[in-house]
Amino acid sequence: MELQPVDSYEVKANGVLSEKDRKIMTFLYQPLMGAECLALYDTLVTEVEENRLWSENHSHTQLLNLLGISLSSLFQARLKLEGLGLLRSFVRTTGESRHYIYEMAAPLSPEQFFSDGLLNIYLYSKIGNAQYQRLRRFFSDESMPENGFDEVTRSFQDVFETFSGSELPISTIENGEPMGRATSRGVILDDKGFDFAVMLQSLSPTMLSRNAVTEEVRACILKLHAIYAVEELDMVHYLYRSVQADGSLDLDYLRKIVRDGYQLQNNRLPELRAKTEKKNCITGTARRSIRHRSISVLSRECDAVSADG
Image (tube, rainbow, N blue to C red; front, side):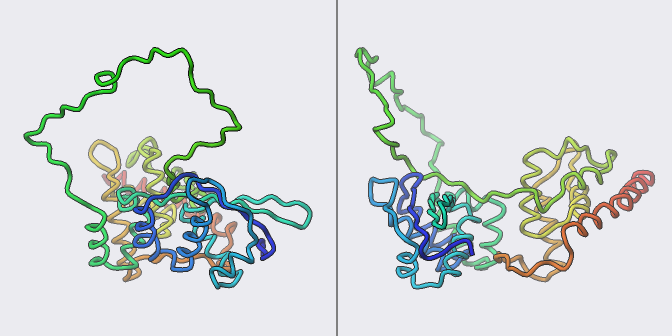
């Protein structure tokens, strides 16, 4: 294992967390990652003293004693926090000793979380519709009424005189790093498990232009692949069904038909599960071979459909 109890660590906060952030962690993230992950997150955040960005150095032995969990459980909890975009880990190896830096990130805001298209789907699957709607109400409120109101707010220039001093503040490295609000990273998805080249090569130009697959569409496809394990050739068929009259893609409809297809095939909603050491029976090389052999078949089908049209 890449982590040992004697390894030292320190915690870096990328800003100040609010009480609202802790409620978000408890109600929105805890159902996805479990109580041990929340305890690890809270413990690491608490180690950074108020009005500070860095903690003192500690060994992982102390962290294990505080949490009362095994080393493997600690490591798995750390991986989940990393995967959810709540923690970044850095390591420096000197001889046989290792020193870690754990940089803590804030959770997504409620607005970001419920429109994420990934985490909110897993939360809905985990807690059900009634509890999900209750949490939406908990983190929502009425918008400000605009009818009948005119804004009368003054600008900075309306209130204050122009600066007339001769000296400006000097910033130096010795002053340290000013603190700000903690920022959110969100879930980072890469395209290692989804071959866009295969998908784009399979598209029939008469049915969908490759230019319609924008960065926004790519991000949506990656999330749908992560949630529902949609393969490249299946995604092509979903894209065809989502084409609008102007040639663009209706992403809301795309999400709906992919979700409906998954439920029809599996008779359940997807669950968020951590990866295990067990490998798939089909290797990555074999999987890519199967994909490429299927391209020509799909292309012939698409040409036939176009000809019939």
